Length: 246
Image (tube, rainbow, N blue to C red; front, top):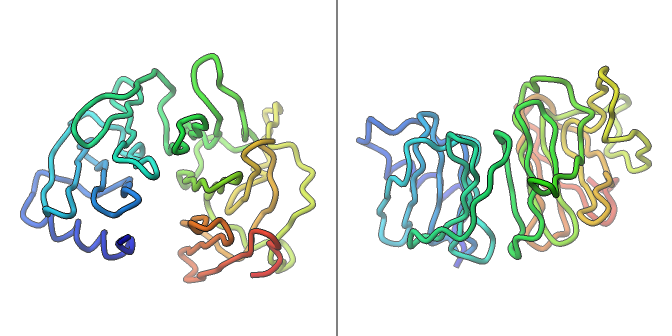
């Protein structure tokens, strides 16, 4: 049985009570069955939570706070250390894979580990790593006000930054022509906010409007909806098949 994310966060908050050395959670991943969670904290701690046993284990004190992610349908998780090496390991402590990378402020990987997506500290994001690094979105200003977060389901992925209400009150935009990989030094930030992408072509499919300021969003597990909430207290759902249906 899967635990609702809010319930998991409440459980984690109770686990942390009395542990003064542990700072607030910056990134958090939960296993698909809700039995484990991995969290990275503001003081660079990486913590593995056994939610069934109500136990926690400090795994590292040099973790990138933005890098914790639990790989779907597995007991494996991903994180990055202070030397910018990304680690994939399981809950038993076995290291599955590691590779050097740029300092990431958000990363995600598919269950088969064939699709790796990450954002750098300048608001740009890429597929792959090393010699296989492919730019997806570089038309972003230096120093975004919000770290990008990602969601990946099936053949689509979602990028979420500061929400965007649209110029004319529109629900979504699907006829997208701006080049997301912009070599010009004057960036347009063409796909800020909530944007749905095609995982195969790496092209944007829809910009989803209505949120503003800091925003969080996900693709539903069945791949049919995008859900987002933001500081303007707006909570929206868009149909993936018809993004204009909000």
